Image 1 (cartoon, rainbow, N blue to C red):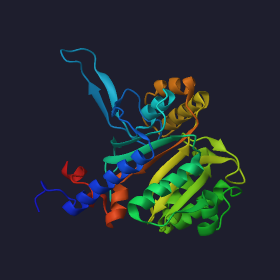
Image 2: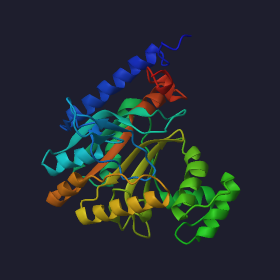
Image 3: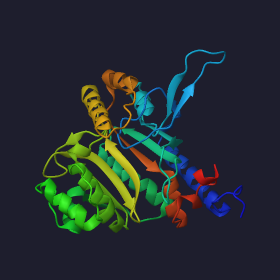
Length: 319
């Protein structure tokens, strides 16, 4: 077959269109506003483990070039809309992550992201279930804490285990001989030993507070304070990642600074932070929960595909 042709069968692309129509119906029926935000930004994602594409805007007729970044998520501008009084919002857009290719990854992919004012992460887990069940016909998800999964599959209590014990497990179970920090070992063990076991719909919540990202830290989900964050897995594949959103501008600034220090420690470029997001948080982000869901992976589950190329017309290899 010539490489001008799509990698996805046309029936899969028709199913993809049906799912996108179903997503739009779902949010229309719930009176959630569809929005669009820019793909290009003067700021970049803070996560040290994501690599944005960069480009230069050059004014017509000459002038100084301005460095811009293709967004890895629409999160920051959507939160600025929330702070401006938009109410509940959703968006389906293309996002871009450098270096990500493989059976479940493409450097350009489709993300569904939405925010619900007045929801916490438990209420948003319910709504994620509502959407996925309506589109895939699956059963509702099992709810389980991050720590409980380590107890179930690795017989380790992460609240009391020393880093040396996690390192021993990582070397024995994952055949990894390098050096990692505590969260690095937890991430390795979770991705290699636990994720593949999560075949039935499973909502994992109460992540370690050190992995809060842009979520708040709460008490009550576990016996120690934990990140108000959840992830949905189906057939061993992460489908969605949601937060009870942090609204404290000062705390957000501290986390941005910590991300920058980690980038330096990992010998990765220090990128410009989104000061406009901090200004929006300072003005006042309403109490809300938000989630990002991978649409290509959703379609993979709907059609029984094993590779993302089967649900994208022209993936990276044929761009």
